[in-house]
Length: 232
Image (tube, rainbow, N blue to C red):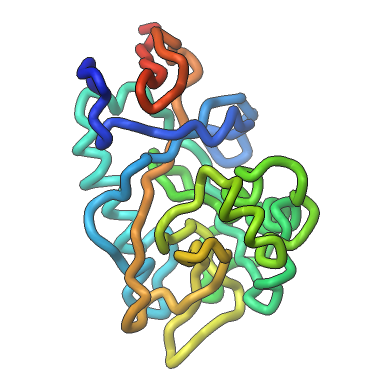
């Protein structure tokens, strides 16, 4: 999104990986690069504003797929709508979840406590807890993230300030507010009430590139990032 050298931080994204994904629910899988914005978007936000809200009706989802999407302007052409999975997680397993276990339940058949669809098609989403789990390599992918937090803090390039994941919780509620998952400032994967005093966290927009996006230059460092174009 910029030809400036060095590239402005607001235009920098990290590559999560090349991930098999769908453009429509039940559609064919296609390997596409998945990116996350280096800089958080805007202020801090509640995941939802009352106990009946699902990801499809949440303010964060609306912010990402309207305000942030419109901010991208001409660069919208690089992004392909994709399926986002909203399988509900279990707060009782907070200190047990491995990256592999999270991946399965994120795509599972249990909805978040407020219901809603198990999958949605949008241009923009947020990180999954499993994205963070896999970001530290394969050493602990089958072991508890929170039990190995020192390793994650030192090795994960997705370690962020306190920020929301896309995943809701299937069971948690506190003072009438249902739960969603977030990465805590100390690196722990945790559950919190979606709206409660002190539970407004950062958001890092995440999306999938179209498969015809091309590498132009760069070596993938902060000083010389990959620059891309699209084969139209």
